[in-house]
Image (cartoon, rainbow, N blue to C red; front, side, top):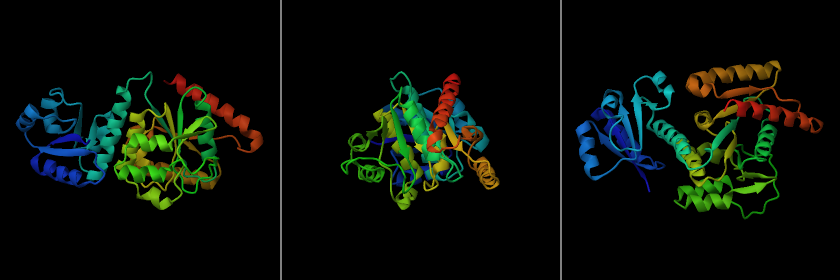
Length: 319
């Protein structure tokens, strides 16, 4: 069932945003437009809203009133959105939808009845052959000793090998069936499997499939993983084949970036950091942690394990 989303802003903006969000095929909301507080009061007499987006000129009067589960401010300035309760209003409707889903995802994590919320860690690097996937798998295996860990490889033509039968659904199958309206709980249960103590979903083979999935679909996918409580921790091995991979960093607690120290690799890292600075908020930018991994030959695997042990100890110490 779709959630009910209200937009309280001046009439031209709220009506236009309502139209665009209601026209989105992948939206999980039915959207209502309001331009006066009195209109919301009348609506709430006989109905309800799950989420309300509030224009800045209204929020002092309405932010702490009315029984609406989630309220977010529509900010005029992008710099005002860093406190986590707001969305920059002058951006594409699809971006607003994706950001809203991500924020609701984080709120949901804080509300679920468990000892600890699901934590999402990303791994990404603009540098090739730096041990990114080896590090991701080693991190997942190490964390799986004490927690239920789900590993997601979002790279095409993944080198991750398994001994699974063809009965399990791949990530491509999951998105196809979810778009067809199939039960997400059933689909994910058929897809999530376990190998060497780590839960995972068989990766997509096609970069076209990966590139074609929109940001709001990824946000909805991660929200469903949270709702199903399929794991305590999710390790996401990111790749540029995901068109919105930078935006998905917002869902992560940290994003680890393995790197090399040769001049070409350092130049790639520098260019990526400049791009990141222009593309995300300072809060998201601070989540990216550069890592200089030990050499990853077979004889050096214990060194990688020791490196990850120290990293997890620091992560636990930081809370």
